[in-house]
Length: 550
Image (tube, rainbow, N blue to C red; front, side, top):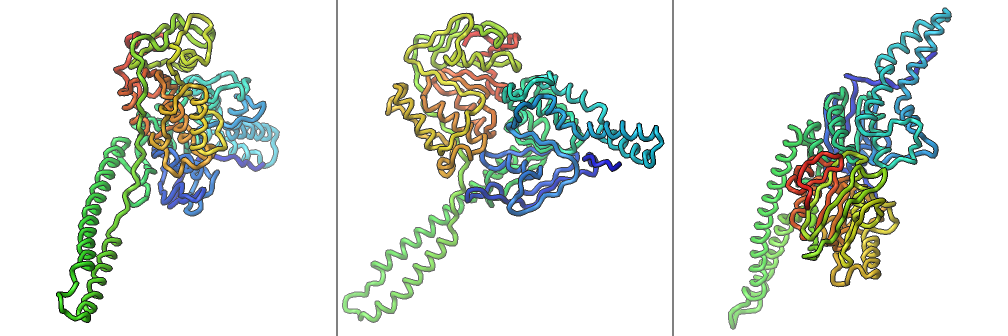
């Protein structure tokens, strides 16, 4: 019997990428990416939405081939994408069995070879030794317990008979993550693993990644997780030479290095601009001399003018070439989010909730009043009812008890936790259709419309791309743009940091502090909770963490 079970390489594990390049739709998604992941390294991958972070994980895992460059792999890999595909009829048990297949195979091989050894079959001793070695390498007997522990601590469904298609996106992701953490892979490649975790789940994941004996490549916007786990950072955002940057010394080293890089870039650009201005001034003077400077005095022969003309023309041309050679194109500036002015309705409450309850979906009754300028931070574990409460406040869900009243003329908009199904139209077309719908329904006057290009959420080239071709983070940006297009008096945000870049998270957080509209944020993001710590807090888990009024 030959045992062909994929075994972890442990200390011999290797994962390295050299000069990766991949192009899609006429543009470079990744260019010049190189990194080496050792069995003890923790890589954080950051960059604006659409910079190729998820694409890089696919290439490292071997599910996508780059146009050029190469990857060396030795060992086993566990990959968690942002979304988990579901087969019809598949259960939680099926997902666990699929991830633990090597451990299952090792145990079966051990049982089979053990029986053969007891029967005295030829070669049974070698088969038994190989099976035992495989089971020990995989720690196969403890695999199910590890998964069960992870399911419990991540707040995932523990009933293995549950159909995956009946679970929410977040529940499925937590099941997938628990399977990976229990499988003891050499390398974990994780794409935004904190999007669906509450405080307990975040603490458990952080500890497990810190203790993981293999290497980790972590695509994440979660600044707290990057600070706690990542030892090196790969930044895919543009740099002065157009190449990605590698930063050591953990997340703090990346922050300091990135600031210094941008400062040098800006200083170099300004220096070149000043030199270009000097050359342009010289060129202008030379051009003026062409027109006036070499006209001969009255009575001078025409041949003198002809003699001087070529030298002046050549001087102008030399200066033109000099100017072109010295010209430096403006560095493509990072996107900067611009919150549009949101309207104010002083006086009466915009939304008033009295003892609102939703059976089996909210753990406690809630009463609150939202006025223009109100701020409220909603926290609590998964299943406490944060999304449910936001849906009730927006009018999308009727409460089973209590009352909700909204000012008739108040515009209330909810940014849901997950994006709807991607549209075939371009981002610009989908946004324009949304705005037309708001105007047609009398929600928005033509004078109140918001220009998508003015929000700083997309580059012009991305506005023309079909939404279904955009990254998950870019689709999330479109969701935010459409929420702001309604110019809401009350803005309700459900996990607004999910899938979006670190820079946008910081800029959005700053904007939420200053907008005149009422803002309610439900989030597990630890850094955002810290940044909004001055806001009144409603903890649906039952622990009073701040003032109840808003």
